[in-house]
Amino acid sequence: MYGIINSSFKKYIVEVYGDEQGAEISDSSGVKPEVFNEYRRHDDENTLALLKAAVEFTGETPDHHLRQFGRFWVRRVATNDFRGLIDSYGGDFVSLIQNLNSMHKEISGTFLDYSPPSFAIKELTESRYSVTYQSHRQGFTPFVLGILEELGDFYGLVTTIEAVETTLSDKGEKSVICIEIPKKVLEV
Image 1 (cartoon, rainbow, N blue to C red):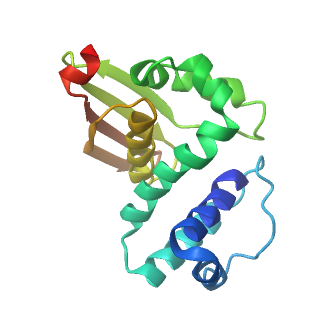
Image 2 (cartoon, one colour; image 1 turned 45 degrees about the vertical axis):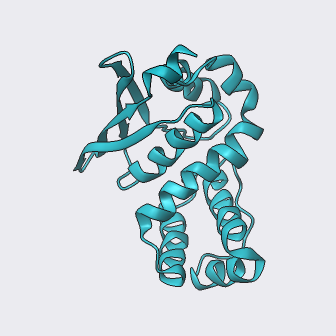
């Protein structure tokens, strides 16, 4: 994972549990308190150790933390640090999802050895969409669900988002995510 993910996860923990408990969770993870280079890849074990420590400390599931972190990511990182990209690639929720691969391609020069996930969106009905998420990493679908939920909020939409199928392989993870946006919201 890139350092920006690890440092942001630490910020998520502090925001949710406070400075003292956030430090306790971070310390118990065994991850060195080094400053992560946000634009370099770091061992995924750092991310997983931080997640495991949060789970052990709070009693919440890994999926809960990843989903809430996905929401935090949009609220605190993406809509601040990458707001210009979001605005240029997504005039609305569906457009942004359609353009995520292009957006990731544009920022690929910023991150060394960048290997982003891919997204494909398909309209099923006027208010129902299917998003296929593929990554070389396993276990991060809940993070993506949180991102999609918070993006819905960002665009003022009330959405229902759920993973309907997830397949793990030695090549990573592939999930089909169903998104429902009430038709009356789309007509406004």
